[in-house]
Length: 541
Image 1 (cartoon, rainbow, N blue to C red):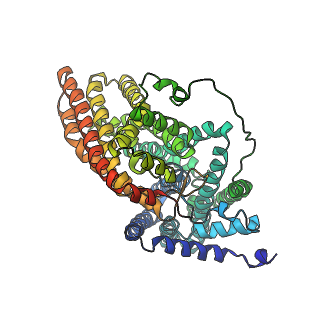
Image 2 (image 1 turned 90 degrees about the vertical axis):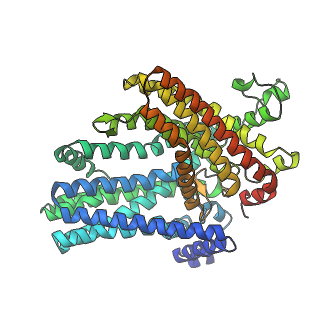
Image 3 (image 1 turned 90 degrees about the horizontal axis):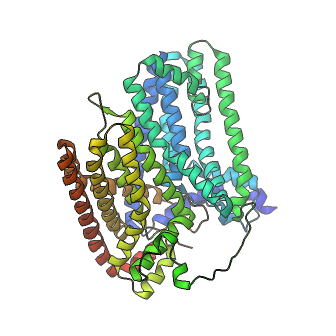
């Protein structure tokens, strides 16, 4: 009873601030990244503030289109990006309160309050202040009040929805029966963010305002954009419509809170309903049983054993599987959307450019490949696995999974968009991008390793490392793109069958050189800094 009376939301906020401060203590690189995250959040906040203010000042159909698409994009980013990329900051992990008599109501309030003490939440608050300012400047106090209420409901939708979604999917992924289906659903949802952004950009750039306005008016009646568009109705004298939009947003927040409430208990105690343990005996030989059926052609050995291990881990580990399926979906959707939506000088985006980003993205998932192992990497150090063998085996396993998909997607997109003449050059770019990005990721994984928390939530990241993941992705993408640029330019300026064959051969060779050189340099560092890397990727208790 004492805990129930004393535990308040402010205590969770103080706890998060204390844990964040302790996590930065003695870690210079974390302090630098934390400062980088603050500046990135400030840049995003000012950009959002200017966008929402401009929408309010513009008014009319243009203002409605801007505020609706911006609000919906903001909400989708909050809901889906943590599943795909940044992860959810688990400084205040509900599982850590499992043994404490903290009521679920108190826990929910405390976690909600703590969620607002973050760079993304504060940046969103600043951005939405522009909504209030824009409404006040053009439409007066009444519109500003409604915009303020809408901004509050909007930020609640973002924060509560993000927490509820990740909590629900984390619970689902603990059950083997629904784990694969949940991972696919997560990937489809999260991987749709970039294609949706490209589609919206194409719509605005190549369509008239009337068509965009029709879509905006429909979108404004959904929870994604209703709270942001309510003040427009007040400005145009439709008070009832504004109240209905706010009611839609409030109902969405209430539903998300109820959903979060229902999944919070399982997230706390680490259980999932309907999961049953089962065991089956196998009469296969011990060594052969460790190799998946697709890899039985490999001769058993150190390298092939590591490849088989990574192959299995990509499919069985919840955190890796969520990333893998997301990459597969993005690899399929992104080239199609770029070819269909993005046009340069009234022509389609060249096929080599459209598939290059999928290849780079596929290999950049290795930028913290030891963090997914955690303390289990100690076994590799004990048996003395050479660093170069380790890194090349991991890259090979990922390539065996992703390369066939990228090849099939490249050919399919070429056929569907009448770009058969660019297939060979595009395949060369894919091979080069995959190899170069894998080599770049190998260097990043040994230079800046970091730990994932010991959590059954596959989207959890330790406090302060969400910004690190984003920074590593930016650095890795930029470095790989710079190295890929010469081949990409050559593929764009040359045409014909012979040129395509040259680009294909050059791409395979350039990608192989990038992979071998990257793993050679990173492998030497891994051999020298193995214990330090193990310490860096071991979660703190």
